[in-house]
Length: 164
Image 1: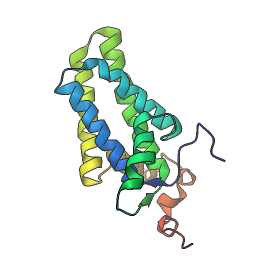
Image 2: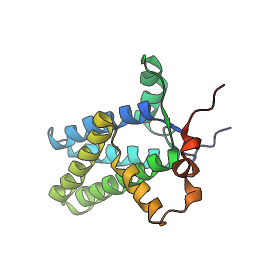
Image 3: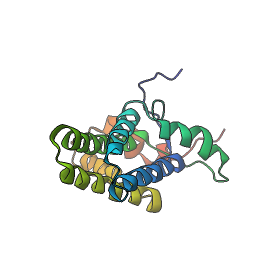
Image 4: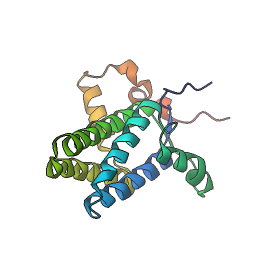
């Protein structure tokens, strides 16, 4: 039984890329549309996803329950810990943007943080290039993140789906 505060492992890369696409759209509403109130939604979404995966994230729920199951593509399973790390970076940036904007009125700084999120989410959604995952791998190689945090990241044999 899945607990509420549990991040999925493995993660469906298709869903992860679709969520990233939703993040891109939301950040463009903020940056291009000038709807800075949506910084709060952005921060909530990242915080919800880093804590629970899609469980408490409206965007995560929409993607995993409605959009992905209707797509004619096979799921592609990838290790969860790097994706959670990437969501953590997004949470840090978006919460920082929310504090800057709502707490200090430093909207230009907040928008720079949102722009960073836009770039990273675009790379993930369009090119399947996860900056947070790359940083996670770098930190694992540097032994900052212990090998047991993501065994599948260390052993390529663990990344392959097991036949049913």
